[in-house]
Length: 407
Image 1 (cartoon, helix red, strand yellow):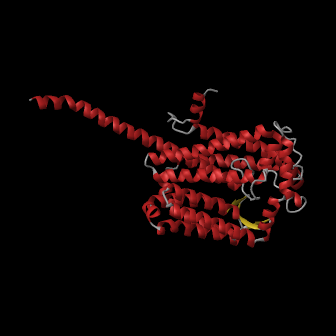
Image 2 (cartoon, rainbow, N blue to C red):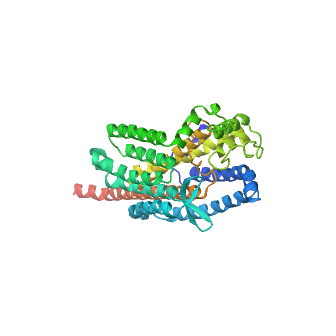
Image 3 (cartoon, one colour):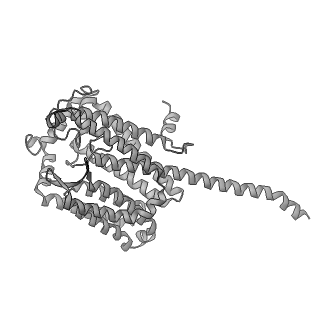
């Protein structure tokens, strides 16, 4: 492929399409790869738990169909609705986080899911999207305050603190870290002062370290991460099995369906640690391909946000940038945890891991990105048309002006 072909694929120049083709193609490919890998990784566990090796596959297929429906709805909803509704969505997110503490289902010691018919809704996933929508609206309304004084900078952090407190009661530190990093990123892009920015980063690190030290199970994860081979059948068991999966993958992997670690050796093989199964079955080539697809998705999200800001669509721009940072950081944490680069966290790999709430919420977020791109292109075309119209009127009036001057 030539350099021109590469530039055309990534659309580094404006496209005539009213939708972002690379974003859509990468999204479809990620969902397709995710469905295949969830099917492969989940068969042993589905056979053991449900006496049907395809049980989890059927559920994932249902989530994908529902996600496609929500994606189409999100692409059809005007961004004006999000602008008006984001304060109410913020309150709805708080309501969901309170509700899960009262009526939520407890699974493996965590109370994160609200039963809703045949599925469980993870409240923190929904609240996360609502919070980013609110934050984008706040940065538009209070941009001068954020840039010029401490009060405007601290206000969104207070809202984040309320959300973080409710999410930590579940407990779910991973989601809090994702929200914190995204908030810091957006405040920086909105023009916050560097001193405040670095102070916030240091404060965030201090709080995360404190939360880890105060909870024995979190501390055990960190200890297992630092030296998993010291206790390969205890604290470091999951990471050791994941690293063994990476080691067996080689360049081209063991072949689709031939993973050994998914055979009840590695816990959560189809969920948090699905990337290790990708590495074992598809090898370096499969890992590189998935990372390229995720990189394209993130790159397009950030580019859409940048273009929206240039078109003076500030809410849309900040919202798209927030989604891009969210996808990027969550992908980095999931891949880093399975590869032993970061401590283990219960975060899904976007559009790859099994999980209804994560897939559905991210499908809505992807639909919002497509809608932002569409509205940005329409606004740019209208501005160009108005500019051309004014130029035409000036050209048409110039002969008359010349005659008048001559008279």
